[in-house]
Length: 301
Image (cartoon, rainbow, N blue to C red; front, side, top):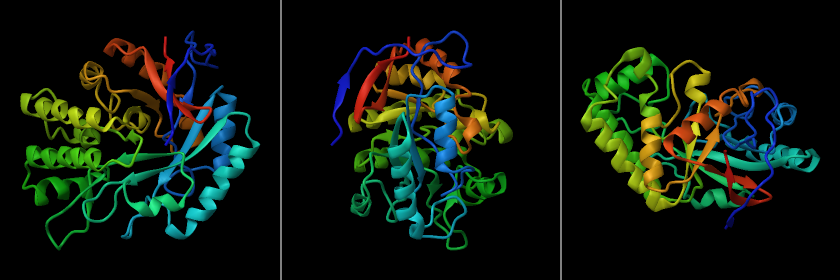
């Protein structure tokens, strides 16, 4: 099990990111082995050029049904070998991970099959909700608008509350099952809200569910990523989780980590400084990162 220490670390000036001196790292990163663009080498070279100290690859782990975003199981060994090559050649820390979906009865980060691979960490995520209708395959809160609207309008009869309650139930179940280090994009269920306005994020019922589910995150002892992938692709105007939720996460002493959810080299570093400002506003002064093979709490001041 990876150990954790708290350290004081020399600040590194961020190339091209204003006056901030925060150490740069990123552990949510997809390349051409799944739905990303660019090779692992191209991703690492970009990170080096930006002054990153530590990066990790987290390609979407294979799923037991056809889809257009996950790595194929037959490519897993090549992926592992490619990331090892980047570790061996790079002057910065490079880590091997997977982003593993939690789908009840089908797949989870806690499945023992992942033990066959020399992973440094795992991201646990909920993308797909079970659709209780044989007419549909698994439907995702992260998919295109038309797919999402089938999930909302036909599976949940147009009830945003019903769908959102199921989503956060799945997040709680993921946390209870364990077997992962980083919780991916906590409130991904809001992704289509900017375009479709299907619920009010300020509604008391929503905030109660989203805040209460943080208790499961705290109990699991996992890292809550501050993910700016939605901003990169124009789907959202802020991070996952929303800044108001980060204040509640801080009150519950949940560790955090800034991640791009990069799907191409040019995604790296774009909103790291903005995320730092959001975290400072929420009361955080540290983020938890993998450095020298250990989880370390590093200053963001």
